[in-house]
Amino acid sequence: MTTIVHVVNGEATAAPLAEAELPGEILVWADALDRGPVLPIGDAEHRAARAAYWAQDLGTDAASIDRDLAAADAAIDAIARTAEEIVLWYEHDLFDQLALIRILARLGRVPPTAPLTLVSIDRHPDVPDFQGFGQLEAYQLASLWPRRIPLAREALDEAAAAWLAVCAPDPRGVAFLTKRTRVLPFLAPALERFLEELPDVANGLTRTEAALVRAIDGGATSLTAMLRALHAGERMYYATDLTVWHALRALSAAGILAIDGALAAALASRPTKATAGLTGASVTARGKEILTGRLDRVATAGIDDWRGGVRLLGNGPVWRFDPASRRVVFA
Image 1 (cartoon, rainbow, N blue to C red):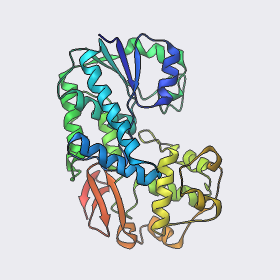
Image 2: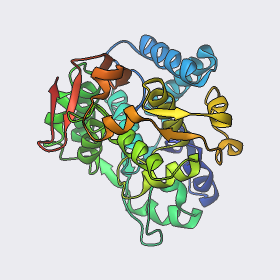
Image 3: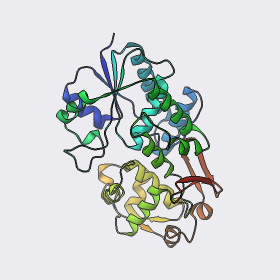
Image 4: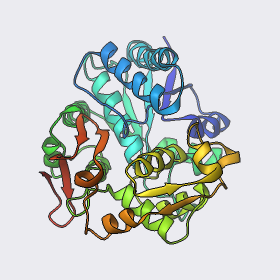
């Protein structure tokens, strides 16, 4: 019999949680499910699709990514059989909520006999601009553990329904659930934020892409400045350096941004501390026309991306989000 297992969505949480010296073991399950294909297929095929996407995007080896994903899934299956308690540390944002429903949907196939509990917050009194558990000290994390809430069968069912909706090629199921989730406290706003990463009906840019173009047009030309601008006023989707890197490549290929000099060379590889201060991004004339809605990004430059199971490809029509009506449309 294994002891208590704390499941977290990355090393940024695992490290301070280890320092907290809570009883039990720590398991990291991490996959940025906001990016790349998320499909209603078998486990092996799904991992292969994820691995192929990340290998192409990051310039790494697909086989090693596949092995890591398989090991993480196997670890979840193992603790479902052996743990005395499974504690899920998943905060409010889109990254964590997608991972949470993925794990709960997996556990729901054969519900564990051990209690499932959740530590999930969207704010902390000591951190005015709270973004995630990684901002907290060990003692602050330890103080949250007694406040964990039990998860019953209803949570597994809600997660399974949400996971099926995210995997679907039609995003209307996700839109439906944004009004009907009741058990998982932060799932509904996270799913709505997920929909905002579909192309906007007005200009074909996602919410993050539009914010990034505006930030660059306003003078945020380094990766550090771009991230700072994207995080300002954000509550549910805190872009990472990889998020920005991917967007810079896509927007450059679409002729919306011009990327020059050392930054252009750096985009061929993964971002590092050394690349954080590089500059060289500017908004093109086409980019300004798209940002103002006089041109449409999809119709003008095409798109090649995924949002869960939704394939965004070509010059349209594609699934889009209408911020005014808060609805998804195919146009």
